[in-house]
Length: 150
Picture 1 (cartoon, one colour):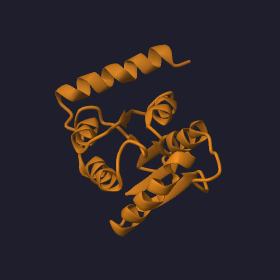
Picture 2 (cartoon, rainbow, N blue to C red):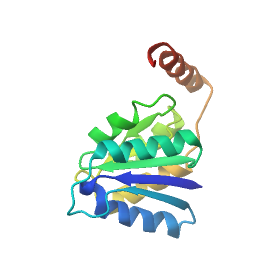
Picture 3 (cartoon, helix red, strand yellow):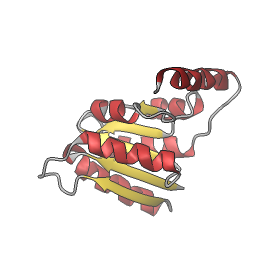
Picture 4 (tube, rainbow, N blue to C red):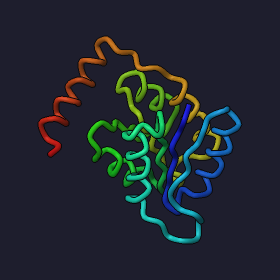
């Protein structure tokens, strides 16, 4: 699977570890965002990169990381067609895929540790959308986007 991943400076170190984890698992990775933990980088730009890569088809799914995950998840969810789940545990990562057909996972580098980040990424990437009754709600989200996104 091709994964786009980007972060601000707060998420840089964890992003590097997640990238290594993804490559080890056989995924193709598009890396973006901060080039160092020491040089400030705007989470807005990192979130835009992830959303645009997913929407353009360059990537199958995305991972967005900032200090808390809050700011970057807000940015990514501003894009029509993106369903980004801000997760703090494996259950949330699985449910974001099963129930919401999320195409981007967001989390905070100051909120989750490396082992938890790896577990959430693995669950997010391996989980399928359950469809059926959940498809009704995803369709409702799409209709809302059509109505509200100009």
